[in-house]
Image (tube, rainbow, N blue to C red; front, side, top):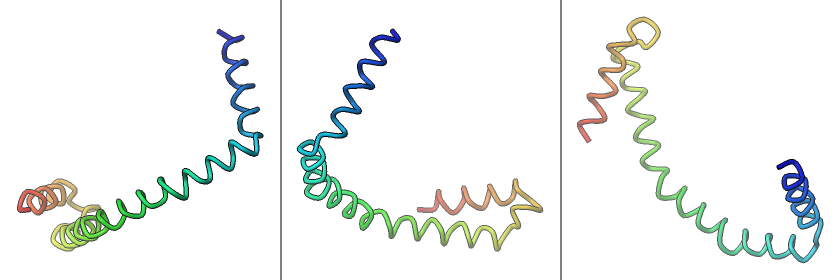
Length: 82
């Protein structure tokens, strides 16, 4: 197992030093990965903002440090309303 692990590590390190592989990885990242993540962020941001707002409102209704059970109930109640 140790031999296989060392062999795989050596192959990965050698591949990481290869300029052609680096260029291909950069091309794939810029052409495919980055646009997909930007699109996913654009679609997720409104939902995250709404969740943040719900948590803030729940924290105003019930202080999480003083009454965590009531705070959890407020959060669940707000998220089930959706």
